[in-house]
Image (tube, rainbow, N blue to C red):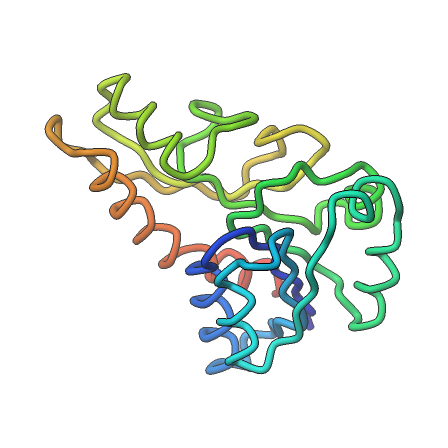
Length: 189
């Protein structure tokens, strides 16, 4: 059984899809046991609370300068972590504690458009500025550097030359919602 912690900084649309999917299909072997956020006002916290998923808000000092989070994750028996729009770099102690058990979803086809500051609209604006006619998602294991872990899954979508960054974002988000939970289910097997 995969006891999953979701790490989120924003509204948590991917987290919502994951929670709802695995709640409706417990036979998939994935249970979301905790939602963690680095923002006390993240919309994902309310969404999780509405679904009776326990939540935890991190502060920067505790997250980066202590290993207290490990005890909190152990308390709810977390054995896998999925980042779903979590904007902080994962510290070395957490990577070591969960080797090849932390996934991230990135809204581009890595290695293009990865690294610090490349998230959300920043990525889609960069894709548009480069004139790319393809974008997509990369689901990868997390290491100690932004967006450099081994790729687990990629999916692409064709773009039109006149697509706006917002239209690119909507197309990519559909890929995210349709695939992240599938990859997690596959890893739970």
